[in-house]
Length: 207
Image (cartoon, rainbow, N blue to C red; front, side, top):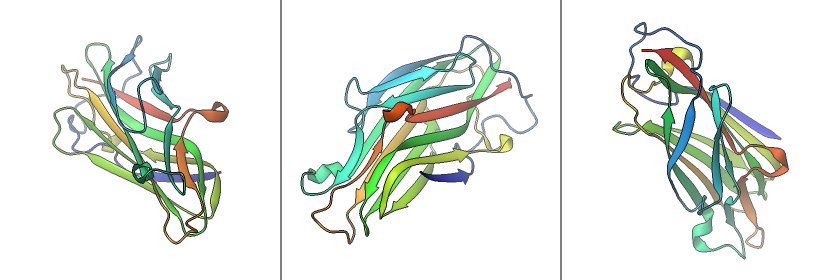
């Protein structure tokens, strides 16, 4: 299985300055509600979101998130995306940020083909977003996993006293490159074989 990791800030421009809040345990009863789901990678009914019972993370499962190129592929199939807008309800006096995100799936790329997994994250009302990308090169045919994590001082937290939606845009791309035109190349972000498509881990602070 191919695993790639990037250590970096996932969300820019920390809303709570360093030193103004204390780290805290997750509040009880955290809920994650889906406000909107849009995109070619997540047709209606093919994406589900589930928070963990301990308030430390939430999981997203996709069943039709597949980018591909090849004889049977449509011209638009080389790129698929999914935009999630989530409302995360937490206890008063608490603020959250995303400290780690992991994506998983399966891919098949012939020699000369390339793939890309990309994601952006931001809170509603922010003018800037952070993009993280992971590249794949053929020949490759296996499970894959990518991970982006932040040090505590680099995490952007939700603003205290406000409940802004968290927006996450995930994307898969496949480029045939110099591979044989008769080959089918694809990247899938799915929940097959018991894996979870994406896991988002929280970090909590007291306001």
